[in-house]
Image (cartoon, one colour):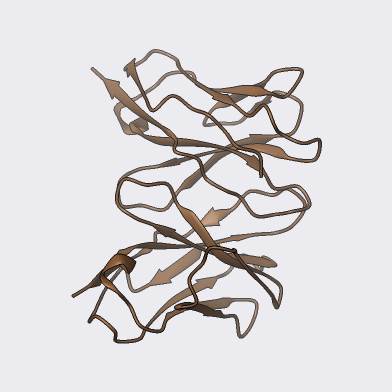
Length: 110
Length: 112
């Protein structure tokens, strides 16, 4: 799996968009970009994933650069319940296993 | 709802006393994973099963073993738990071809 680099922490005001960056410069052609989040004492929750194209679902949007070396997870209207550790993972494809990096601790404040 | 279920949520064992953690899934996924997560750290993959094929990570201690008797169930056996094995143990499943992992809520293991 490709190594990922994320900022250790970020703050966001409630109601504003949270933009979480991730670098994955060694990603290979068949590896996906996955985003998960983990709230204390729970298992990681799947948010979104993509290969080359930008993706959007009911939780978030994923923007992947054209060279696929970085991506941004966008939570369009952050709420207090979005406070969590967010993990960006580059992997999967034919290999199927995913290796977690250190993640970004997002704090949403009033 | 289809899901990944881990039992128990909390497990206490004594130093050196074997312990088994269980995971079941109703998703009918081919792949099942066990991760270890220590306090304030990211989950670390221990091993995974692709159907019945077992794949061990190179740095997973021999103290950790796993069994997958059928598609739905997977077990993590810790033969002689040490204090350093206290952690949250997470089970996950996926189908193949780039699909995301689905995690259970974990079992928190305490070693006394």
